[in-house]
Image (cartoon, rainbow over all chains, first blue to last red; front, side, top):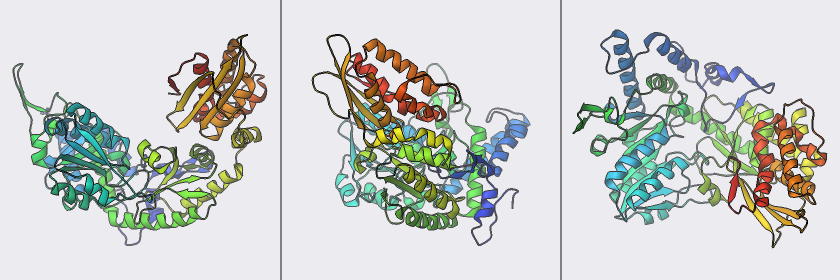
Length: 415
Length: 149
């Protein structure tokens, strides 16, 4: 087992996992940090921090163009990172993995390039009411450019996609269905396999926004049967500024480049440029090499623990948290879909989420308050904002207890 | 609970949050809408300027956190009867108070001093100043929306 890898013992040893994350030792406002803002970004294990440092200390060079040893080592590390992502998503071919800045860039890449060549006047793009702005706005831009129309599949009050209503939106004009795997604001786990099956029956391609899924449940893009899958490294214990897009090779091959520049070309003259093969066609310029290498170490870390075990731990903690929060008078959970991921979003009568966030912060409890980049969803729920505690593998019952205690303090202030 | 939190959420603030003063619509005057995209606070400030150039009446409506609501309520109380120039000067002094050094002296601002605790919570400055930005837009009869961004 490589140094810094977590224990593979049968029991889920949270105390040991917590020791892998140096930041969890720090104090905030004089109190132990209780980090419950994992849907915004996750903390980094020492293995990832050390890998980034080692890359810059020992391997740093530009890739794909040097004949010297360091360039070869950096290129090897970058290529190996791509293979790690392929394995993590169970994709068929590493050529189908494009490194990007994050989920947002991945979706923009598809909306811009696939959209430019496949969306026409009168065509339709289907999203859901629970999408993050990053899975809405790129499609609005693509629709505006093409004269296409954005259709929105509704959700239930519990925060589940209404599959019947979704099905009714599908028609021969539906060109793409873009849906999140896990809702960042509700925790709902969408039935992406069933969504893909129904969308394909109408000839549409399917993009899954996996930003909130990859750190919390096993992802197998071939089992899902989607056409594109996007995620961000920083939400799965990796560095910021790097993420990946997986796409079917035949679709990526047919798409025009996203950005032009170095590395994405085979040959350039002023008259004509030949583009590079996959995936380099979509990776113009020097990529985030250190980020990709760091992301691979994060995925290795997660894989060594096992996403099934992480999911089971978080599911148990979500149930515990649901019970603990439900005991607080005037608190209402937003997002109660069965089997949801570790998102505990809520509102409390007569206390604005922003005030909750400030009071919790002084107790060392980090949560997010606001619209969570889901303004249309907030409108659907009839609230201006919610407070959101989001769990990860290193969270404990003690964290949830600290959250509940701080919420009682907030209620006392506003009593 | 920390002393800083007690200072931020002191009784005057909680009272104005629970029972905001001048919380109504004013017909026939000027108004402007303010929006804080960070947290979704949204309010409208209504004004009536009398013949002498004074703020004859001022009110607000909207939704937001305790700080933004209490600040709007306290603001309406303190600018009523002021000239436009006096209200602008008060905004400047208020802004200086809530963005000043955490342990510096506090200007004499009467009831508005209740919001001095915001100095220790820099991310909440926008909440406290939203009503004032909106007031300024209303004074300029700027019908478009102002934001704190």
